[in-house]
Length: 192
Ligand SMILES: Nc1nc2c(ncn2[C@@H]2O[C@H](COP(=O)(O)OP(=O)(O)OP(=O)(O)O)[C@@H](O)[C@H]2O)c(=O)[nH]1
Ligand SMILES: [Mg+2]
Image 1 (cartoon, rainbow, N blue to C red):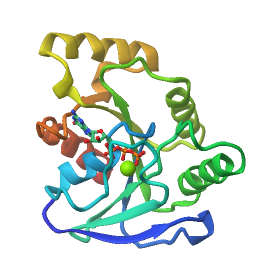
Image 2: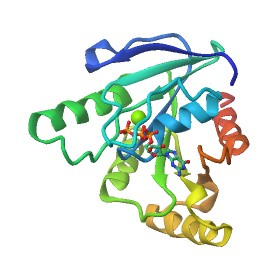
Image 3: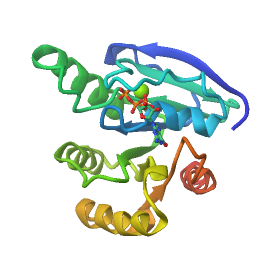
Image 4: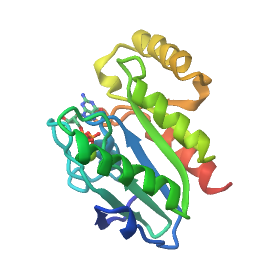
């Protein structure tokens, strides 16, 4: 993934456009590491803005990869400080994107490798199931655990998400771990 370029930010589902290029979206809880994951895949730490403060990405950001694929950085869900109308707008934005993007071929749903899946993670999976959108799970921040702990957590995640372990790719953006396996997943969806 060498030539990665920012395309646009979208704040309203009505602004969602058809770029004529296949899209893979990156979803997950706020602060799970979505923007870092995109930067890691693209070998460019300045591409998507990251932050230790949750709720950094509030818009949908599109990144064009070699004119072959568009990676879509979605706003994180479950950000506690967003409530009421703000939260509704946010849910509409993510939901609107997922339902209205003609070129969407898969969603990478990111979960922190250290934690049990949350109710919101399960909701996200139920949502993509409902709309028949292919997805796979990316466990992030694997640098925080030992190899043995990672194996154990992979099983915990698989059980909690009611999925086979083969649907879970373990990564660390910090230690640049798991890229080949992620790219294999991408190829699988791109060539389908
Ligand atoms: N140790 C470690 N920290 C990471 C990793 N990936 C991301 N982080 C850290 O986690 C925090 C959040 O990262 P982001 O990439 O901004 O997370 P995000 O999911 O885009 O967050 P929002 O845009 O707020 O939803 C930052 O402090 C990152 O440095 C990783 O692989 N390992
Ligand atoms: Mg982000």
